Image (tube, rainbow, N blue to C red; front, side, top):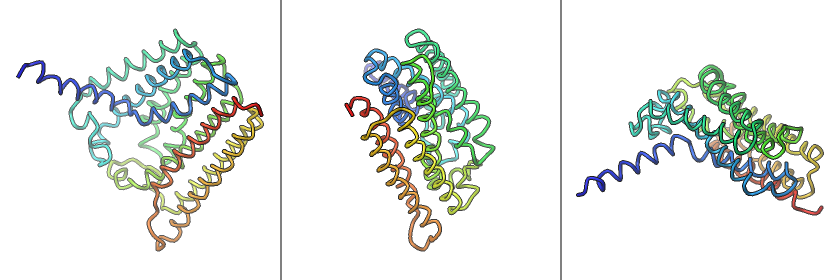
Length: 303
């Protein structure tokens, strides 16, 4: 066999290992919020070039933050069943390779925004990376059960970046969008943590479901979900949203709140069956997608 042919699978697997470092599924979710925000900021189509430049830069930034996170959490990943196949655990990549990749990708993302979009969005991109890497991963994740609440602020930054990419500044509307995602993060992540709480306990990560019973967690999910729905409705007067967004926000909010109520009731009465926490986790993704698709469509309607 030709030596180059034998090396090809290794090169391909290493490429996909670098891709895995960036956590592509998380990036997809961030982009779902960025595009509608830019459309709302522009009150229509923001321009194909600006949109693509922002999405590429945002993907680089999120990939950098996620790669830093995977490097810093490699000891945790080794003892959690959910993360045992990550490239730093399997040995597909060395620690130094991941660290250099994360640093280069982060630097490229900031320069990309600064040179091709504007320096306001570049500054917010730097803030987003630091929030996720330093504030969440290093300072909060292993120290407090509220880690995902405050650390989740990093996941809210794409709406500020997207808005500033269009306008060069930040206003009340993107701050409300920020709050929607801020309040959405616990109802999204805690059900996942309920499912894998034994993993987190083994790794010594004090996620709320690890240190609190299911009833308390269910109650907190309900509180944050109610605040999230209130934030979606606050966007109507703040951003002048139309009837389509309003109907979508009310309907999707009622549906998701009901799924959270069901989770809470099952926590109160475990004899009724399994918690079905992952149903709420997947439902949260559907909910956020519906709300932000409505944000994107609303500016194009004449009423």
